[in-house]
Image 1: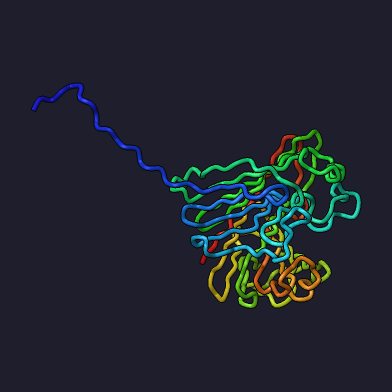
Image 2: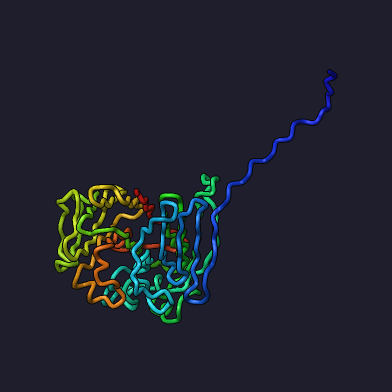
Amino acid sequence: MVDRANRPSALNAPAAAAPGAQVDIVGEGASAKVTATLPSGESVEVLLYGATVTSWKSNGGKTENLFLSEAAAVDGSKAVRGGIPVVFPVFGPPPKSGHATSALPQHGFARTSRWEYLGKSSSEDALDGNSVKLDFGLYTSGLSEDARKAWPFDFGLVYSITLAKDSLQTVINVRNEGENSFEFQFLLHTYLKVQDISKVAVNGLLGVQYVDKVLNASTHTESNSSVTISGEVDRVYSSIPQDTTSVLEDGKPRYDVVRDNLQDTVVWNPWIEKANSIGDFQPKDGYKNMVCIEVGAVNGWQKLEKGEVFEGGQVIKSLL
């Protein structure tokens, strides 16, 4: 057999690309939302109003992980009750006077503003198609006239939501785009869905100082390794040393909430009387099927000078 010096090399067929996530924009106007579904079935839905995550399904799309009130407004008429609302630039009722946020409504304007969908991308390590990142933006120019008047600072927010097979990552990037410094607070008001609140325990808060809003905003130190809920709970845990807060149900791990550059966590459940007093909380016994684990920077204020950037967020792992 003659060996030819210039014989053609073997052709290497390119590997078939894995199918990517399906991303769609559904609806119009204030009800428009972005949906993403992985090839394996997991999905997320994000309302452009407030950039509020209203659904996150894991386990091949069979398990809903977020509680959404049956009476939640998803038409842009008010903040969404449930899912993951974005709280910025103030948490709770603003200071009564003397602060730049004093003229703002409770929880600020991010959750009641129309965000811009900036597009999708795949994570570098997700060549199997089992991850997709959705980016949303909110800028000074996108605010209502009332919001701009109440908080006259130039800023930019980019909110990144990454859906993976067993987790959801939500990260905020805050940039000061003006000449003047500003202060802000930030929180992700996550409503996690559970089967039975009486069987839920929250771990990872032992020894942490908290403000109990149910007990006249008095300060306490958590003495229980597992926090259980048998009545209204509204606590702000601050300067938590470890990154992970875990939710167990019936003794079994259900969620891990992993904070990134955020030191505080609110634990909230309205219980019977409060749920009855909240007009858009339905069903009224829905408090049995949810617990809020809300990561944020709410103990004091974050300050950004001209051109500075703050970034923080969470990864929620569904452990079913």
